[in-house]
Every structure is written in structure tokens, then in C-alpha cells.
Amino acid sequence: MVARLVIAAPASGSGKTTVATGLMAAFTSAGLTVSPHKAGPDYIDPGYHALATGRPGRNLDAYLCGTELIAPLFAHGAAGCDLAVVEGVMGLYDGAAGAGELASTAQIAKLLRAPVVLVVDASSQSRSVAALVHGFASWDPQVRIGGVILNKVASDRHEELLREALEESGVPVLGVLRRIQRAATPSRHLGLVPVAERRADAVASVEAMAELVREGCDLEALLGLARSAPSLGAEPWEAGAACGPVGLTTSAPPVVAVAGGPAFTFSYAEHPELLTAAGADVVTFDPLRDEQLPDGTSGLVIGGGFPEVYAPELSANEALRKAVAGLASSGAPIAAECAGLLYLARSLDGAPMCGVLDAEARMSERLTLGYREAVAVSDSALAAAGTRLNGHEFHRTVVEPAAGPAPAWGMHRPERRVEGFVQQGVHASYLHTHWASQPGMALRFVERCTR
Image (cartoon, rainbow, N blue to C red; front, side, top):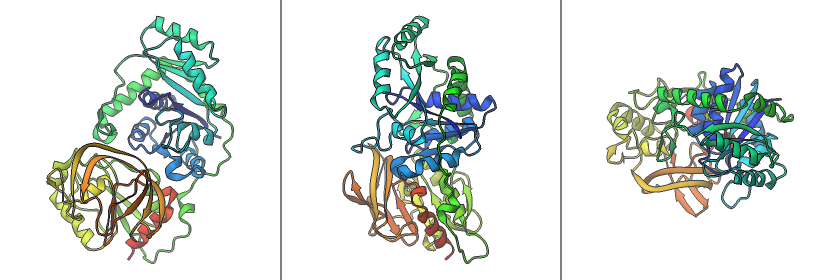
């Protein structure tokens, strides 16, 4: 039994991240062990959650992983914790386009049997707030909205009007936050600036969020609401069980190098756990600073991030670029997603990259964003041809050509196209995937590393 809350909102931009991160930090500083979670595919918010709690931020995405894995993944992350806080995505009932409630915050709340706290931007309303809250609370009887936190409240008189209106709704006010800027976090072309790029300032931001929440929210009532959640009755997901028996023939585990640091911050917490369970020795390195791959590297994973922000620095690290190109030419397995794809190209915005792929990358004005249904077109170190899975794209860059002679994926929704590159041991693509839904990808990758 883990006490739990889902922090939701009527729409994006209402203050979910401020409230959720502030609650995580406030309860952690009060001595509770808090498990942080984020609904949806976002990589950036979990970094702030991890900073607030000292535990890995974990994603819960029903589109990427399937509804059947949400409760087990939650139980895995929350094991041994006093409280779990789940930050929602978009508006409470918004999910995958054209798929009903799939991947919505409401669906996650129902799968977790968790009470919802609705964060409302009250800056341009008074009595109408009651109609808004009533509508959200009554839309789906299976979604239990246990309270509301009013954000961007202008004055004591404004607060008085809002509280008076909400008395008629039957939904208690559990917090009121004033319209101030001290908890603000800077944004960029894909959302908040990741923690790894502004560590000291991010610590200050999280502390400000915690103080804001402590001042404006009824923490005792929120904890009581969280403890009212019923037993979940789900067995925790385990990477070892997901991978099954592993029979590696080598005496020492193969070293899998995983790119990290400020340029490569996008990774799901379960990926290194799966690689380890599959038999690998996972070692993180920073392409901005490390001039060589970790000793004994036999496989390389380069996830998402912001190489476009650090293109000059990545390019200047010529020694590492050559080491990556050498590893690729040896046929070693390399899995590259989004930022990793850009890093393997010949150049990024004119700056030389690793030159593994015969392609050029550049920034674009167009945002590519959304869930994708995909099938593996070519056999690779990650997947056999014909493997089907769901993924996610999120970038403002373009790679030309978009696919190599052996494409990585064929997309079936929202449009039909091929994308990505498979050559020798390299699998490079824009598509973000969650390996918990396909643990065989980690097994296949590590097995290829032993060859």
C-alpha cells in the first residue's frame, strides 16, 4: 500500500509541474520517502522530480507501454516509499489523438486507483471556477477529484471569491498559490531546460517550488487524501523477470556505454535496469567532456537530448567522435535515438559530428511531435524485422535523407513513411521507445555485444 496522488489540470500551462515538484520536495524535506512519476513520454520533468526527491523520476505512459504495465511499473518505482506523486500530462482528459482516453492523466489515475488534485489557473476568473471544477469532477465518475489547488491567485479578495464559489462545487480547496515568479523555470524550444544543464539554478528552482507549496497548500490534508487511496493489488515490475533467464557465454559482462551529461539527458529509468538485467555492465559517459569511450566498450547507447544546443562543443571533442566512428566501423551494436541520430550524422548545423551516417542534420522551425505506430523494417541490433511497437517523436530538427538504404522503422500512424538507419551494428532513428514494453530489445542488444 503506497499513499499516492495524481496532480492534474484542465489544460497545459496551469502549473502542474510547479505543484507536483513542489509537493515532492516539501514532503521529502519533511522526512517522507517520495516516489516521483510523470504521466506521458516527457523526459524533462522527471529530472526535476529526481532533484526534488533524490530518487529516479519514472514515466507512466499507457501508449508506449500498454495499460497492463502501468500499475506494475508504478509499484516498481514506489516500492518502499511513503508517498508517490504522479504529475499528469496536458489536460486531465487529454490523451493520444483519436484514441479516446488512452495515455491520458485520467486513465493513469484510474489504473492506479489514485485520487486526483486539480491545479486550476484562476488568474482570469472568479465564480466561473466552480463550473469548471464541477465539469471536470463529474465528467468521468471513475475519476475521483479529491481537491483543487488554485494557482496564480491575485489577491486576498480574489481568493475569497474563488473559495466562496467552490463551496458550491463540493470539491475542497487544498491550496492557493499567489501569482509570483520566484519558482519559474526557463523554457526552450522543447520545453523546460533540463536539470543537467542548470544544476545549481535548478536546485534553487525546486527549493522555491517547495517553499511556495509549503506556504500555500494544506500538506496535512493532501497527505490524508493520498493515504485514502485503496490497495493497488499489483505485483511490481522487475527487470530481471522481464528479461527472463540470461545465458551469456562470456566470463565478464559486456560493457555498454550510455551517453549522458547535459547534451544527452533523455532516458527512461528502466532502460539501464533492463540492460543490467540482460547481463551488461552499464557505464555512463559524457560526450561533452570524455575524450574516449569507457574501457572495454562493446556496445553504445545514445539517447535523446539537446545536441543542437551543444553542437560546437560536441564537434570540438574530435577524439571521442573518432572513437565512436571506430566503434561503429567495427560492427559493434550502437542504439541511437533522436539526439543520438544527430550525433552520428556527418554534421549538425554545419558542425562536424561522428560521420557514421551518410546524412546531414539541421535545426528546423517545424515541431515534430506525437505518438507513432511503428514496425521494424530491417533486422538490427535492437529488433528483428517485423517487430511492432509504439513510439514517440519530439524534435525540431531535420535529418536529410530521412532514411538510409535499410530503414529502421516503417511508420503506420499518423502517416505512412520509413525513417531511420540500420547499417552494420548501428540502429539510428528519431523514434523514442520504452523498452519495458519490449524487453527483448535489451536482451538482443546485449547478446549482440557479446559477439
